Image (cartoon, rainbow, N blue to C red):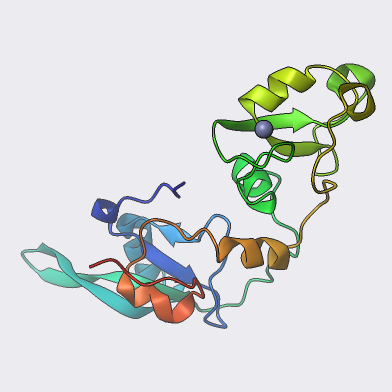
Length: 185
Ligand SMILES: [Zn+2]
């Protein structure tokens, strides 16, 4: 399970004006080009830097590893309805058998029965369970999700996210994140 961040991209962690990450899911990261641009547009302050620098004949600058917005952006209370966030709400476990393999989605009330693709009706399910349940209602299939699907708050996902940190965290980000993990050497 990863968030698509390549260390080679030297991304900058983007903090809100209160020094908390602008977003956790996905983690707010900008590629170094965007971070530098924002510095020059005077939209951010540099909080921490990488060792690596960009330079031209007349100019040299260390790449920012953490930047902080100058004006506060009100964070949204509810996270986006995305594949990642549904899996995160369900802790990357099939809601029928509890396994974490080969995850996909299941519509609890099947689409052909009017079930919608919403937080309230979509759960993480492994392919095997998904196939087994097919287009049946939970009662007909005798398969009920372990947890009734619901719309999570950012706080809910944050709590689950502590169990599933992204696989790459620059050490300068750790002061601003609350993942309970140690960096790998
Ligand atoms: Zn399953």
